[in-house]
Structures are given as C-alpha cells and as structure tokens.
Amino acid sequence: MVEQGYPRKLVAGVLAISRSSLYYRKRPRGSRADRRWDSQLVAACGIKPAYGNRRVAWWLKRKEGVIVNRKRVLRVMREQGLLVPSRRLRVRRRKEWDRVEVSRPNQIWQADLTKIWAGSSVGWAYLVSVIDCYTREIVGWDIESLPDGGSLGGCRGVGVTLTTDNGTQFTSSRFIETLNRLGITHRRTAYHHPEGNSYIERFHRSLK
Figure (cartoon, rainbow, N blue to C red):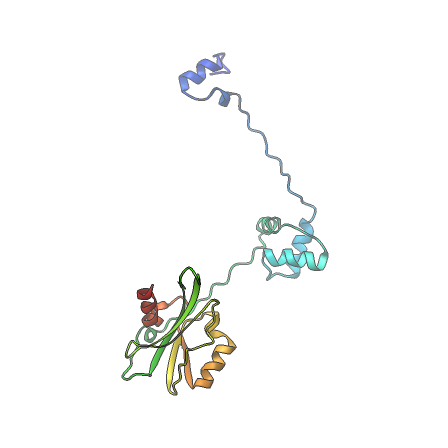
C-alpha cells in the first residue's frame, strides 16, 4: 500500500500497527564472535574425542596456552557436530529390592542421611539414622554440621545387613571399613530407587 502511494500514517492507522514498522528493513546480522581459535578447538577435539566443552577449554589453556571462553568452545563444538553424548547410567532394578522380609530384630537395618534445621544456634545440620526394619526402632543416629556417614552411633551387630543408598558417604572407604569392623553386611539400593530404602526414608519424612 505504501508502494502504491498511500501515506504511511494512513496505512498504519487503517491496519492498527505502529508507523515505525513501516520503516523497518531487515538487515543481515553480523557476527562479532572471535574465530581465531576455531581450528585449534577442532584439533583439540580430535586429540581428546571424549572431552566435553569444559575439559576442552581446560586442555587448551593447560597445553596450548590458549584462553577461550567455555561458551565459545561449546558453540564451535555444536556447529561442528563434536559434542560428546552424555552417558546415562542404566541400572536394572531387581524386583526383590522393593520387599523387606524380616523375621526377627537385628536382621536388616536401613540407614540414610538427611539435612534438617537444628535451631538458630546451630543452623542446618546433617542427620544420619539407622532403623531396624523389624521393630521400626531407631538403633543408632548421629548429627553433625558436615555430612559424614562414617559414624553409626554405636551400632554393632554380627549378621546384620545394612541397606543404604549410593551416596558418597555410604560408599566411602571409611564407611566400608567401619562396617567391616562392626561385622555388618552392606547392601546398596538401585540408583534412583528410594523404595529400596523405604523405612528410613519414611522416618525422616515424619521427623521433618
């Protein structure tokens, strides 16, 4: 309509649009990205094909003396199809891990670590609790300002099986050594499967 000679003000009023949109002309967007190190980025990915963008940026800085922003590395790797696919841990869950079959006390225990509010004088603290799956009794607990699964609050029992998740506190060498010293068998639940540790999970929920 403007090209046919109608005034822009009239066209904008009839179409109910901004008059400035009639003056807009799309321009090609220029890239201000620094492309000097693209070839070295691609070469680094060829040398270290298993590295992600963070490790490639670290490797260039450490080995080549090239300081490149991690986002620039990510952009180049994405453009060149060099991104490493993430490895997802797939664990087959066993059906029996949902069931806890006990016939006497001190047969199967469950332990877990949780973060709780311990009052204004203490602040946030970490509580580790151990429950007997037969009596539903807390047989041991410990509370610290830092997460630590090494202490079992005085628990001891030969022939006891202790079930935990796969947290770093429960897979540490210190924790395993403590269990061996106390004569406790360790069993870990499947990944992303809290039902295998349901008794202690439910206790901590009620406690909170």
